[in-house]
Image 1 (cartoon, rainbow, N blue to C red):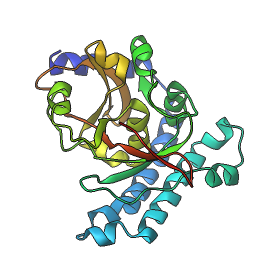
Image 2 (cartoon, rainbow, N blue to C red):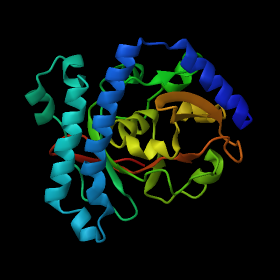
Image 3 (spheres, rainbow, N blue to C red):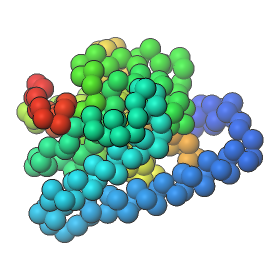
Image 4 (cartoon, rainbow, N blue to C red):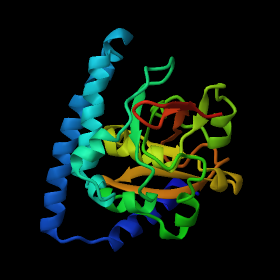
Length: 251
């Protein structure tokens, strides 16, 4: 699809969603405040040395920040939990593996379409059946290290996957959503592919990006080259932490 055609489709979708001016202003004010907090929290990862970036103290601060973000969005209420219970049941980050820049808490107990609703992310409803498949992820909250999708920027999905290392897998839309919720400033510059297994085998990949400041999810043909908008495939380290105590690996 040509870029103008894609922009036209997104513009049409945005016109269908018309909140009143008061709601729009209130939401923008909250989003602007969140972007500033997020940029400050993640600024540690712009530090010059890996030792500074990955100290336990710094990772604990970032973990606290991410847990609070989910609580502010009401994820604990969605699961019938108190905020303290939600925090106590959230796994910690593993030490930073070589080549991976961004640790994330991923909530897989809440259906992905419900997470979109809680976070104000719009979606092409015709593609929901492709996007909501999440079969190969655990059914509990977990933490994972990712790349920020810049490594494979402007490459189509098929080309990017061929370059994966043995410790790397393509992130799902759940993990891409976690990246948006926790580090939204990345999406000011680019969008992110997510590679759910069934949609990939059908020759399509999901993607999340922003259009006029509004997050939007749709699908795209995996061998489209070059991508019609600035996209990069998000990839994850193949060890995740599913509880505070236990660690398991994924192939």
